Amino acid sequence: DAGVTQSPTHLIKTRGQQVTLRCSPKSGHDTVSWYQQALGQGPQFIFQYYEEEERQRGNFPDRFSGHQFPNYSSELNVNALLLGDSALYLCASGKWRETSQPQHFGDGTRLSIL
Amino acid sequence: GEDVEQSLFLSVREGDSSVINCTYTDSSSTYLYWYKQEPGAGLQLLTYIFSNMDMKQDQRLTVLLNKKDKHLSLRIADTQTGDSAIYFCAESILINSGTYKYIFGTGTRLKVLA
Image (cartoon, rainbow over all chains, first blue to last red; front, side):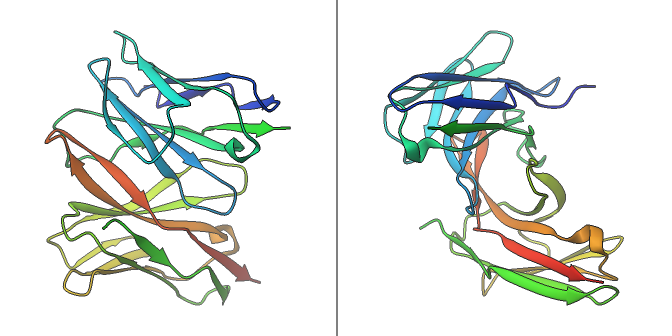
Protein backbone atom coordinates (compact mmCIF):
# COMPACT_ATOMS: atom_id res chain seq x y z
CA ASP A 1 0.00 0.00 0.00
CA ALA A 2 1.75 3.13 -1.24
CA GLY A 3 1.76 6.09 1.07
CA VAL A 4 1.74 9.70 -0.04
CA THR A 5 4.04 10.22 -3.00
CA GLN A 6 5.37 13.55 -4.21
CA SER A 7 7.26 14.51 -7.34
CA PRO A 8 9.78 15.70 -8.12
CA THR A 9 11.98 15.29 -5.04
CA HIS A 10 14.15 18.27 -5.91
CA LEU A 11 13.68 21.22 -8.23
CA ILE A 12 15.74 24.28 -9.10
CA LYS A 13 14.10 27.34 -10.65
CA THR A 14 14.97 30.98 -11.17
CA ARG A 15 13.11 34.06 -10.01
CA GLY A 16 10.01 34.85 -12.04
CA GLN A 17 9.49 31.33 -13.28
CA GLN A 18 6.52 29.11 -12.57
CA VAL A 19 6.56 25.67 -10.96
CA THR A 20 4.16 22.74 -10.57
CA LEU A 21 4.52 20.18 -7.81
CA ARG A 22 2.58 16.94 -7.71
CA CYS A 23 1.11 14.75 -4.99
CA SER A 24 -0.63 11.39 -4.97
CA PRO A 25 -2.50 10.69 -1.75
CA LYS A 26 -2.41 7.48 0.21
CA SER A 27 -4.80 4.86 -1.15
CA GLY A 28 -8.28 5.42 0.28
CA HIS A 29 -7.69 9.10 1.10
CA ASP A 30 -9.66 11.86 -0.57
CA THR A 31 -8.34 15.13 0.90
CA VAL A 32 -4.99 16.70 0.09
CA SER A 33 -3.31 19.52 1.99
CA TRP A 34 -0.16 21.42 1.07
CA TYR A 35 2.39 22.86 3.47
CA GLN A 36 5.46 25.04 3.00
CA GLN A 37 8.45 24.47 5.28
CA ALA A 38 11.08 27.17 5.03
CA LEU A 39 14.56 26.44 6.36
CA GLY A 40 14.61 26.38 10.14
CA GLN A 41 10.83 26.71 10.42
CA GLY A 42 7.87 24.47 11.00
CA PRO A 43 5.52 23.66 8.11
CA GLN A 44 2.94 26.32 7.27
CA PHE A 45 -0.50 25.42 5.89
CA ILE A 46 -1.04 26.61 2.31
CA PHE A 47 -4.42 25.14 1.38
CA GLN A 48 -6.54 22.01 1.30
CA TYR A 49 -8.51 20.29 -1.45
CA TYR A 50 -11.51 18.00 -1.33
CA GLU A 51 -13.84 17.04 -4.15
CA GLU A 52 -11.67 19.06 -6.53
CA GLU A 53 -12.34 22.29 -4.66
CA GLU A 54 -10.14 24.43 -2.44
CA ARG A 55 -11.76 24.12 0.99
CA GLN A 56 -9.48 26.16 3.23
CA ARG A 57 -6.57 28.48 2.61
CA GLY A 58 -3.74 29.68 4.80
CA ASN A 59 -2.02 33.05 4.63
CA PHE A 60 -0.43 32.68 1.20
CA PRO A 61 -0.73 35.01 -1.82
CA ASP A 62 -2.67 34.21 -4.96
CA ARG A 63 0.59 33.23 -6.67
CA PHE A 64 0.01 29.92 -4.92
CA SER A 65 -2.76 27.92 -6.54
CA GLY A 66 -3.73 24.32 -6.74
CA HIS A 67 -5.85 21.70 -8.30
CA GLN A 68 -7.28 18.33 -7.37
CA PHE A 69 -8.11 15.73 -9.96
CA PRO A 70 -10.91 13.13 -9.98
CA ASN A 71 -8.41 10.46 -8.86
CA TYR A 72 -7.72 12.64 -5.76
CA SER A 73 -4.17 13.53 -6.80
CA SER A 74 -3.23 17.17 -6.55
CA GLU A 75 -0.94 19.82 -7.95
CA LEU A 76 0.51 22.92 -6.34
CA ASN A 77 1.36 25.75 -8.72
CA VAL A 78 3.47 28.74 -7.81
CA ASN A 79 3.77 31.65 -10.24
CA ALA A 80 6.29 34.49 -10.40
CA LEU A 81 8.71 32.69 -8.10
CA LEU A 82 10.55 34.70 -5.46
CA LEU A 83 13.73 33.81 -3.61
CA GLY A 84 11.62 33.44 -0.49
CA ASP A 85 9.67 30.60 -2.08
CA SER A 86 12.68 28.35 -1.56
CA ALA A 87 11.43 25.68 0.82
CA LEU A 88 10.41 22.08 1.33
CA TYR A 89 6.84 21.62 0.10
CA LEU A 90 4.96 18.89 1.88
CA CYS A 91 1.74 17.20 0.87
CA ALA A 92 -0.55 15.51 3.39
CA SER A 93 -3.55 13.32 2.70
CA GLY A 94 -6.49 12.28 4.81
CA LYS A 95 -10.05 11.10 4.62
CA TRP A 96 -12.98 13.47 4.79
CA ARG A 97 -14.83 13.21 8.12
CA GLU A 98 -12.36 10.75 9.61
CA THR A 99 -10.90 13.33 11.92
CA SER A 100 -9.72 10.74 14.45
CA GLN A 101 -7.02 9.54 12.09
CA PRO A 102 -3.81 11.50 11.51
CA GLN A 103 -3.03 12.77 8.07
CA HIS A 104 -0.15 11.15 6.23
CA PHE A 105 2.72 13.24 4.91
CA GLY A 106 4.86 12.70 1.85
CA ASP A 107 8.62 13.18 1.86
CA GLY A 108 8.27 16.55 0.16
CA THR A 109 9.65 18.42 -2.81
CA ARG A 110 12.63 20.62 -2.11
CA LEU A 111 12.37 23.76 -4.24
CA SER A 112 15.38 26.02 -4.65
CA ILE A 113 15.06 29.43 -6.29
CA LEU A 114 18.20 31.01 -7.74
CA GLY B 1 -5.37 32.61 17.70
CA GLU B 2 -3.32 29.79 16.31
CA ASP B 3 0.21 29.58 17.64
CA VAL B 4 2.44 26.72 18.76
CA GLU B 5 5.69 27.39 20.57
CA GLN B 6 8.67 25.18 21.33
CA SER B 7 12.15 25.71 22.69
CA LEU B 8 14.73 25.64 19.92
CA PHE B 9 17.43 23.32 21.25
CA LEU B 10 17.91 20.42 23.65
CA SER B 11 21.08 18.49 24.32
CA VAL B 12 21.17 15.25 26.33
CA ARG B 13 23.60 12.42 26.96
CA GLU B 14 22.99 8.99 25.47
CA GLY B 15 20.93 6.85 27.85
CA ASP B 16 19.34 9.82 29.61
CA SER B 17 15.71 10.86 29.19
CA SER B 18 14.79 13.76 26.93
CA VAL B 19 11.80 16.00 27.54
CA ILE B 20 10.62 18.28 24.75
CA ASN B 21 7.98 20.87 25.61
CA CYS B 22 5.35 22.65 23.58
CA THR B 23 2.64 25.21 24.27
CA TYR B 24 -0.31 25.97 22.05
CA THR B 25 -3.01 28.60 22.07
CA ASP B 26 -6.06 27.21 20.27
CA SER B 27 -8.37 25.55 22.78
CA SER B 28 -10.39 23.91 19.99
CA SER B 29 -7.56 21.52 19.12
CA THR B 30 -8.84 17.98 18.65
CA TYR B 31 -5.55 16.12 18.49
CA LEU B 32 -1.95 16.99 19.26
CA TYR B 33 0.96 15.38 17.48
CA TRP B 34 4.68 14.84 17.69
CA TYR B 35 6.66 14.52 14.47
CA LYS B 36 10.34 13.76 13.93
CA GLN B 37 12.33 15.19 11.03
CA GLU B 38 15.83 14.07 10.17
CA PRO B 39 18.11 16.17 7.92
CA GLY B 40 16.81 16.36 4.35
CA ALA B 41 13.82 14.17 5.12
CA GLY B 42 10.07 14.58 5.47
CA LEU B 43 7.98 14.31 8.62
CA GLN B 44 7.71 11.05 10.53
CA LEU B 45 4.70 10.74 12.83
CA LEU B 46 5.89 9.57 16.26
CA THR B 47 2.74 9.65 18.32
CA TYR B 48 -0.43 11.64 18.92
CA ILE B 49 -2.91 12.21 21.70
CA PHE B 50 -6.60 13.06 21.74
CA SER B 51 -7.24 16.39 23.43
CA ASN B 52 -9.32 14.88 26.25
CA MET B 53 -6.53 12.52 27.34
CA ASP B 54 -3.83 13.33 29.88
CA MET B 55 -1.17 10.82 28.95
CA LYS B 56 -0.22 8.33 26.31
CA GLN B 57 2.68 5.89 26.40
CA ASP B 58 4.14 4.15 23.37
CA GLN B 59 7.32 2.16 24.04
CA ARG B 60 10.05 4.71 24.81
CA LEU B 61 7.73 7.65 24.20
CA THR B 62 5.45 9.27 26.78
CA VAL B 63 3.18 12.16 25.91
CA LEU B 64 1.74 14.35 28.64
CA LEU B 65 -1.03 16.84 27.98
CA ASN B 66 -2.13 19.59 30.35
CA LYS B 67 -5.16 20.98 28.60
CA LYS B 68 -5.77 23.67 31.20
CA ASP B 69 -2.32 25.16 30.61
CA LYS B 70 -2.28 24.18 26.91
CA HIS B 71 1.02 22.41 27.47
CA LEU B 72 2.22 19.27 25.72
CA SER B 73 5.42 17.34 26.36
CA LEU B 74 7.22 14.42 24.79
CA ARG B 75 9.50 12.28 26.94
CA ILE B 76 11.94 9.94 25.22
CA ALA B 77 13.35 7.33 27.59
CA ASP B 78 16.86 5.93 27.12
CA THR B 79 17.68 8.45 24.41
CA GLN B 80 19.92 7.12 21.64
CA THR B 81 22.13 8.88 19.09
CA GLY B 82 19.59 7.88 16.43
CA ASP B 83 17.06 10.08 18.20
CA SER B 84 19.02 13.18 17.16
CA ALA B 85 16.65 15.13 14.93
CA ILE B 86 14.19 18.02 14.93
CA TYR B 87 10.95 17.35 16.77
CA PHE B 88 7.77 19.21 15.84
CA CYS B 89 4.70 19.61 17.96
CA ALA B 90 1.47 20.15 15.99
CA GLU B 91 -2.16 20.75 16.82
CA SER B 92 -5.07 19.89 14.58
CA ILE B 93 -7.76 22.49 14.01
CA LEU B 94 -11.07 21.27 12.67
CA ILE B 95 -12.15 23.05 9.48
CA ASN B 96 -15.23 22.69 7.33
CA SER B 97 -16.65 20.09 9.75
CA GLY B 98 -15.03 17.40 7.71
CA THR B 99 -11.32 17.65 8.05
CA TYR B 100 -8.60 19.63 9.73
CA LYS B 101 -5.38 21.53 9.23
CA TYR B 102 -2.23 21.26 11.28
CA ILE B 103 -0.52 24.13 13.07
CA PHE B 104 3.14 23.31 13.66
CA GLY B 105 5.64 24.67 16.12
CA THR B 106 9.06 25.86 14.98
CA GLY B 107 10.67 22.60 16.07
CA THR B 108 13.12 21.56 18.79
CA ARG B 109 16.51 20.36 17.66
CA LEU B 110 17.54 17.41 19.86
CA LYS B 111 21.22 16.58 20.00
CA VAL B 112 22.23 13.34 21.71
CA LEU B 113 25.80 13.20 22.94
CA ALA B 114 27.57 9.83 22.98
